[in-house]
Length: 197
Image (cartoon, rainbow, N blue to C red; front, side, top):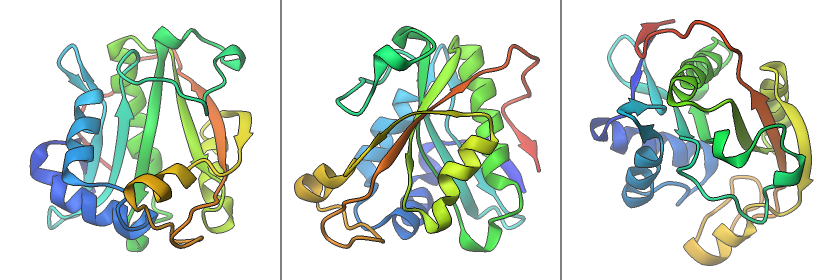
């Protein structure tokens, strides 16, 4: 397994994987291109893909640099442990079914955190999908050291209503809830932006 920065060459494969995992119309070429740019500052890219031995995308992590995303009504800034100017955002992660349980998501998170730290962020926020099978997403992020800030009911319903997002759990109208969680970043040595797992 090899992890490298997300570039436009990987966009089609990431869109296909993300829509398989998270539901139809979750990502598009335009939305992914914008998200990738939100993760780059000071020449440092905080979004990554995991490739198998055949160089096929089997996982991805989209992260936004601090100051390059806009808090919304599902953000509880008053409860955050750091200022918004130092808060990065973990937008999305996905790992193919065949590669789950092998440490791919954790490796993607670790390398993304390292890049975000180099950009100057001191913490990262995520809205975790609580209806993932067995609430695995929240358990995984908690295991990584994140703490729960607040639960937001029907977090993604507006996407169903505005862009036709089709939830894999709810169908055409998403009623899933999100766990707003914060991961404080360690002050430590940071790995390179490419490595094998």
